[in-house]
Image (cartoon, rainbow, N blue to C red; front, side, top):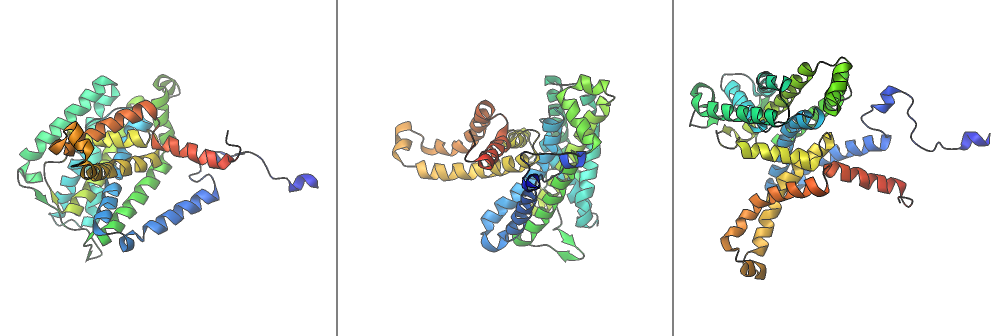
Length: 356
């Protein structure tokens, strides 16, 4: 009788379904739902500028999520992700200008970009490491050269116009309404990837990353899954690019260069490679970092530090310098990213006061 009143100590999982559940506890699930409900009130409490930053975090986090599939989960390398982001933006703008409803343009742009990603992902079947990085860099330059030349598709030197988002005949106008569109896509995309990693294909991608020889011995087709990872990454990049196009309602050739690809890499490195939630954390960090540097630049301008170091007008370059410095710091002191640090914090409070 006394044994029936004892609470189990430890984490006992007796089924595979329990081991791969999205939310390990009811509390974590409820906290996630509460967080989504609270963020729905953002347009009512935040100003237009802060809401614009949230929209950017949502859009870029979808694209960064695709890159994390290639780099974090499959162990490949891609430094041409921004080109697929731009291709998705131009594709959605092109479709919307040819009488395709914007509601369907966004997923269609993702599918078309995924097909392009499968083509450029073919070298991944035989290349790895530095050679694969050079191949993805070549894809970046190929697409960047394609954008200004394909006037029928991108408008050439003239920026392409994109129709505003609309659904059931109602046009979404302003950041207050578009915020909910981006939020819906973020939730759907993150749920898709979370469930993908629980499937056989998701476990195969991770097996390719951990030890490709063992994966091949187990019967996993390396060519298939390496190429598939690039297709999936391009799909989410295309969806993010489409949302970006209809948010700005204009798409130019600028903004999709190698610097944007490096920023996408920084997002997943800082957030944590192979971490879905870390992708969102890293994106938020990278979007808010320039704003923090802008505040720091304004605070230091004209100060004693400014005069002592002779920064003067060069202080504005802190924004550009900070990205590289932050990446180096995270690679040295926190290579597992913000997601790992968050897990440590949760473990500390879970075991408190016996956390040591």
